[in-house]
Image: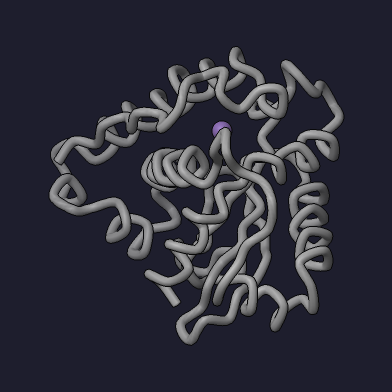
Length: 202
Ligand code: MN3
């Protein structure tokens, strides 16, 4: 099968002032599009061509750099767009909020742990909130386009919230101020979507 660049669920300027329109446009139409095209090229003519993205990620041959980097890039950005919303922000509720309190003591303590994971990821990568079978949540980070669905990466489990900390995600607006970008991200988190993913994967 051939993977398609997913449409953004909102306009390029919808997340302003937290994430600017030009960053969103380049990030989606150039970077995400590139991962999608390169993933299709990497799997063409192989037995991965008939597999879905979760199957590809969970059974990743970590020595296959083209599929690892572009399969990760394809999936991670699809998640990233969906866990943000112009109507986002606030705090989680329901069983996700309870799981966060169980793991971190409070929403604020979780926010600090997630922000630290994002800020201290050296170079390019992602910060994640993952859910394990049974419902426990955990924060981790990973390098490049790796994600915790891949064998041996991060905290394992299923990522339900992800933050792209590659410079391409924030440099036009925030330059080297990654902590300001991380802070702004919390204003656009779509907790309804994160909760949905929590319920589906706990
Ligand atoms: Mn990116």
